Length: 148
Ligand code: HEC
Image 1 (cartoon, rainbow, N blue to C red):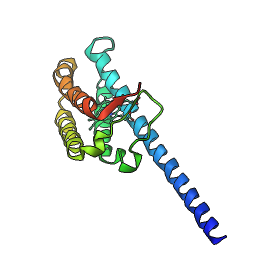
Image 2 (cartoon, protein in one colour):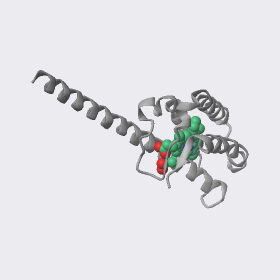
Image 3 (cartoon, rainbow, N blue to C red):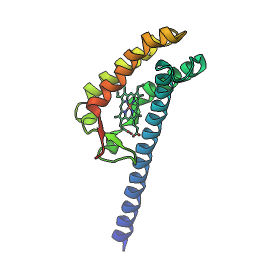
């Protein structure tokens, strides 16, 4: 009897842990989607589809900074193998090559910090942003998987 209780308690615990991990995966994806939305707003200004807007630029850079700060905790080892609902998921390389992943976070963080305060108009936007977006692509290339 006691054993059954223990087993039941353990099952409940691990089910709770899986829910928490899936929750983290969904939160991570929401953070990246928000980041993507902000990048899209910037891209529209670079392409001239939208007029230059300083508030949009500042909000995007604040979001990128927030993402850079959160990236080190967005992918705990316990979420390895879990998939969010969207089109992308985390590559196992995040945990297999932790040093490489962390160095991408560090360089992204640095570029975001360097870019802050430099963008004042559409010319500086066009000068600064491609380098920053390269950081996004550089990490995705290795550490993000397209679900197929
Ligand atoms: C250090 C690595 C890293 C950096 C830097 C990074 N990302 Fe990501 N990104 C990921 C990983 C890993 C995923 C896959 C996990 C996921 O989709 O939840 C992802 C997923 C995404 C997604 C897909 C979300 C979905 O629908 O599944 C978007 C959009 C995105 N990133 C945008 C950006 C943008 C824009 C930048 C730069 C401003 C950026 N990311 C910088 C690692 C990074």
